[in-house]
Image (cartoon, helix red, strand yellow):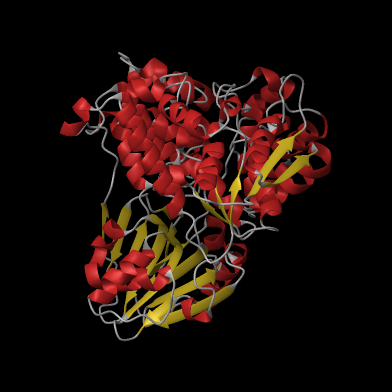
Length: 591
C-alpha cells in the first residue's frame, strides 16, 4: 500500500520534475517509509512507500529492472505473489528482492497486459517500457486502489490521489457539471471516468490503459462479474452453496494475512467484521488487535455499537481497542483533516469515523482487514428485495437510493449547471447491459462495480491511507465476488438480506451479533445537525467563498438551514450536510 505518480510527455518539452516531486510529497501519508523518482526520457515515475512486504530497501520504488528494460510504480498488494514468484522462477526469471512489486514487474514482462489475470489482490500500477517509451496504467478488478489522471499541455500526469495532482499545478479546476449531478443525485457517487473537477479523470476499475509516446491511447476493461449460473449450479442445494461460500471466504481471509508485519481487524460488531475475526481465530490467530469507534447519541439515534463488538472481542480474546468520539471535542476539530484526506468529496457520515479510527489503529498495526463489500456482494441492503420481479427496475432502484429528483437538482444549483438528468441516464444504461438479466442482479452489479468503488471502498482507502495504514477487504476477493454472483438471489436475500452469510455466520460466531438490527459506524451529529456542528455548517454554506463559487442557489441553502431535519435523503443522509461538505472540500483543497 503506497502512493504512486508520474508524467509522460508527448512533445519535446522536459518533464517538470519539480511538479512531480510536489505531487509525490503530497502523498507522504500514504507512504511514510520511503520515496523515489526515476526518469527515462519522456517518462518519469515517482513513489511513496509503506513497507508491508519485504521491509528492506531492495523492494524500494519505483523499481527498475535494467535487464528487462522496465520500471514500475505499484500501489497495493498481490496476495499470491509467492506462488507467482515460483512460477516465474521456473521460467528463468531471477529476483533481487522478496516482495510483490518485483513479481508485478516480472509478470508484466512474461505475460504482458494479461498479467492481471494471474493476480489475486488489490492494485494500481504504472509500467514504463524503456525501449518503446510506452506507458501502461492498470487498476484492480473492484477498484480498491485508486488512480487519477490529468491532461496537461503536451502530456499526461497520474497519481494515487486527486489532491496530489492539484499540488503539481496547471489543472482545470472548474466543476464538472455531470459529476455535480451525480454527487447531488446518485448519493455522492461519481462514476469513473468523471471526478468533481473538469480537469481530472480517474481510471475505471478493471481497466488497462496503454499510452504510446505520441499520445495515442487504447483502453480495455478486463473483468466484470457475470450474474449467470453455470451448468453445475442447477443441482446445488442450499447446503452446497453455503459450503462453497464459506470455503471461498476462508480463502479470502487467509490470503489477506500475507505480510511481514502484524494484521489487525476493524471490528464494528456487525456480521461482516465479526465473521472475519471468527475465521481468523479458526485459522489459529491469537491475540488479534481489533478496533471499534463510537460517537455520542443524538436523540434516539445511538452513536456506537460497542455492545456487539465487545461480544466478539470477549469471545475470541482479542486485544480490543475502543475510541469514543465527542462531537465538539474531537469531531469538529478533526473535520478539516478528514476532508483534506478525501480524494473526492464523500458525503457519508461515517467517513470521520474511519478517519479517527484509522488514527488510533495506526498506533498499533500497519495492516487491517475490514468488512466492506459484504452488503453489495451478498444482498444486504434494503433496496434489493423490492427489486425482485420488478417491472420498473430503474424507478424502484432510484426511489430507494437516489437523493433527489432532477427537478430538485435544478432548484438547488445555479442555472449554468442545470444540464440533463445524467444520473438516471447512467443507471438506465447500466441496467440495460447484458450479463445481469434479473432486476435485482442489475442493482447488485451496479452497486458492486460503481457505487461500492466510489463510496465504501474509496472511503476506507482514503481514511486509512491518511494515517499510513493498509486496509484489506476479503469480501472483495474477486473469486468470492464471482461465486456470489452465481448464488441464487433467494439465498442472498433471505433472512432480511445476506441470508447465506448469516447462515454461515451461525456456524462460526456468536448468534447475538447476527440476529440484531443492521448497523454501521453511525455518526448522528452529521445527520441531525445541532449546536456547534450546525453553526459550522451554516458558516461554510453561506460564506463569501461559497457565494462566489455560484454552485448552489441561496434560496435552496436557506431552505435547508431553516429545517435541516426535514431534508433527509431516502438513505437517511442530510441534504444540508451534502451541500456543506462540497464547499468544505473545495475550501480545504484551495479551489
